[in-house]
Image (cartoon, rainbow, N blue to C red; front, side, top):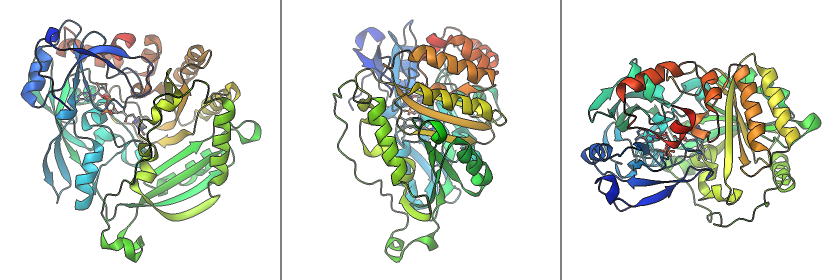
Length: 459
Ligand SMILES: Cc1cc2nc3c(=O)[nH]c(=O)nc-3n(C[C@H](O)[C@H](O)[C@H](O)COP(=O)(O)OP(=O)(O)OC[C@H]3O[C@@H](n4cnc5c(N)ncnc54)[C@H](O)[C@@H]3O)c2cc1C
């Protein structure tokens, strides 16, 4: 990617920038620093509309956009600086992707401590959104494994930030609004092989699913349920549950033992077409897909060996899959409600099913203890994530109502997925928001760091 030098804003051309859901594109000057010095110069060159760091643009909404201002694309700052292969510690630039970390670290017997549903995210984006994975109930979110990071703040200084400090807690999940993360030290997870041992089972409805998850999630490092939100009546909330762990060396067939730690992400399918007719994803077509997918899943299967990519990142095999929702893009709605609030979850699932949102496989998972990030999303409870075409009639009002239910139950919506939440709902959902705003006012009084999300939510 050609590098754009961080000269004053007027010298750089503007480009459209969007999130993964492609719902609210905006135009900004995109700067691509290749060194810490260039990053500092880029921050100094931000004009009155400020700037925001951006990784691989996998946040669904407007978190890494900044209409009329600067966007610092950090992906050219992508060096792995050191690896301690005995202790499992990596020090890397913030623009390094989890994909690259896997390529380099798996052969050494180490895996990233937390991976989301795509490995095409950067370490900076992983900290900025304090991402979670299928192992949240056991391992917490990404920040729990971060030993330190270097943060470029609005005054141009670079601070080394460690856990247990306010700046750490404001930055992990702080959506880039405390500064630009330049590098991080991350504790890795030891693995014996690059394969997963996976158990699959079907759940007939939502209560059956919650009972299965509650009964023995703790026996698995990774756990997730793909739920059919178009099924109605007695089948409401039916799901396929997949759980597993890294396969031990002994579980491998002889053939695979020759190179047990090889990283084999698998081939990529043809990219989704650039133009998909509106209306292709109707309730009927998506319902048929979900039906076939549910029927083809085994009722019960244990110990299946799967590649990491198939288990963690099935969508990465289809480049630009986000185009299937057509030109209007799509909204991803993800919320969490605490344990004891199962009735709220049941009510929301029933409402979504009745509403007939043409949503491909949605995901339900149990979170464990939350991490201290002030705007970090996970808290102990049930989290549901679903994609919905943005053009669905009445979607805005419908999701506002769901926000009210979620906030009323003490839950919250995930900012990395969001493009439409209202500021009053945010205040109700994130009790540490006043602390975040106070720290930001002190650290960055001129709001050098800002984004479309920040302006929309008054952050
Ligand atoms: C298919 C898919 C599946 C996903 N699954 C999950 C999941 O299971 N769990 C989960 O938690 N998330 C999930 N996500 C969301 C994704 O993990 C987060 O949005 C993540 O932040 C994206 O990282 P990125 O590098 O693309 O950052 P961007 O999307 O570019 O930016 C995200 C945020 O991080 C900030 N940021 C980026 N780089 C820096 C930096 N260097 N310094 C400071 N701030 C920075 C940005 O300002 C922005 O606020 C998924 C996304 C997709 C597309």
